[in-house]
Amino acid sequence: MTQNAIWPPIVWPRKTTEVPKEIFVREDIYREELRRIFMGPEWFPVAHASEVPNNGDFRTCVVGEVPLLVTRDEDGELNVFYNACSHRGAQLETKSCGNKKLFQCPYHRWGFNARGTLVGCPLKEGDSVGFSKDKYPLSRPRMDIVHGLIFVTLSDAAPSLAEFLGGYEDKLANVMGGDGRLKLIGYHKTLLNANWKTYHDNDGWHAPLLHTAFRLLNWQGGKGIQFANARGHRGFESQLSVPDGRAFLNDPTLIEYRGGSFAEKGSCSLHLFPLFAAVKHLDTIGLRFVNPRSVDQTELIFAYFGREDDDEAMTRHRIRQSSNLLGPCGMVSMEDAAVFQRLHIGSRTPGMQIFQKGVKDEYAMPTDFSQNDESVNILSWEYYREVMGFAKEAV
Amino acid sequence: MSGMSMDELRLVDELQLRYIDALDRKQMPEWAALFGAEAEYVCTTAESEQAGLPLALIMDDCRGRIDDRVKFVDRVWAGTFQDYQTRHFVQRLACSRTQAGLFSVRSNVAIAFTRSDTNATGLLATGVYHDLVAVEQGRACFRSKRVVVDAAVLPHYVVYPF
Image 1 (cartoon, each protein chain N blue to C red):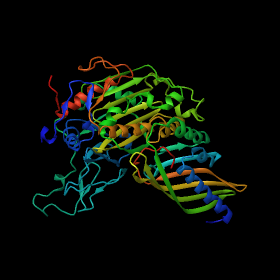
Image 2: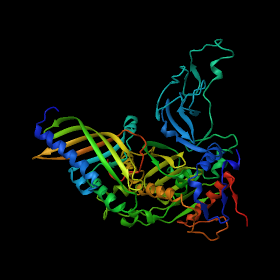
Image 3: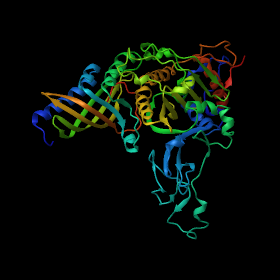
């Protein structure tokens, strides 16, 4: 498949500050994104080790359209498999999570342990030409782990995970409170009626003007920085300046910050191309596993964590704060989903989305960003353009 | 419906109907007024319950948070979202006295919603209400309402409580 799979072709504007709206709503572009990006040489976080803490724990997930199975085997090792029987390819596990010693395909009763070894099968050696159980383990994509976060890539052409992250391992650790020693407290899962790129482009960075809560609480952002690289990753780190809250909230614990010594990075995020986001805000630690469902719909799985060394009171605080602050019903995030949906509908009009704040040269790649500059997203769009093979308009 | 008088059962049912009516009319102060001075409202998913995960979709586990939710809907989020109209349908399944003046009620609930931008109607959620209802001096109020939603993945953002 070549650029011809996309017709009419996209001609990307010369201005780095413009993004064609039609890329958010065209089915042909979406299909090509699945091939070039989601099956391509990118790395995708699929779970954190703390989501499968016990031997035999498993979790299923999807990258693009490819179903995967994450397990912790009897030796405590983490594994990622394609979620399909090695016999006829039927989906092996259907539950989102659980604990099992044996994953059995109902079709012909082939059974696999958490290491992916075929351990049970009605066939015996000699029943068919060349059959032996050790020839048919579950297939695996490439995987790697950083700070407990399990990454996979579906492409042999992907660079190492370290190269993909481009030095942002420490940024990832910061979001998780300094390292990857986390403890799962639960999930918020919702469908966003918008293209996946709308989520990637707008989650994390968007104007505080949207969130009335900040104004009502007189909540001013602390001093912070944004960063971005040519691989399309970006993020921010800022101090926390938390208002008292009692003037507006009957229960100000919703915005209470108990993070103590980590206050200088009390609010931080890392957004990895194409879709993953890790966000720490106040005492919430969230890993956002996001996946496209269609050109018009994106699945958001927000996983929330405490720290392994949290005491009971801190665990309780994180549960109460994470439940009500963010997510599809969250005080300072419900309206995100609403405005992302409007962005998607508006993308069916002709023309360009425009970046303004922080832009110093409309034709150049920005290299530094102030705290609230939307120009931080421009590098990610340039990476996307290159991956998709969209030519720039001639001078 | 063990250990209940018809009058008590009527008060419990009327409370449930006032609850869904307040939500479908988007009258958040009326919604909050149906909870007692010490009360909680928690909404979670069946998947979280089965996995033993404590995080909730909404955890208004004290009276202050219930009152704060009225502010979220009526003031914080005002003008920021495309509104939708809900229609709640409730079917009481079981009701029993747990102690004097306190009743445990289990009901199925289905919540349809019609988006203001598309005018299309869909199913927002189905699930179960697990309620503790206090009846005192001819008046019923919720001591606790725990909503367990069947779907793990919500089809839409949530403005109004379930």
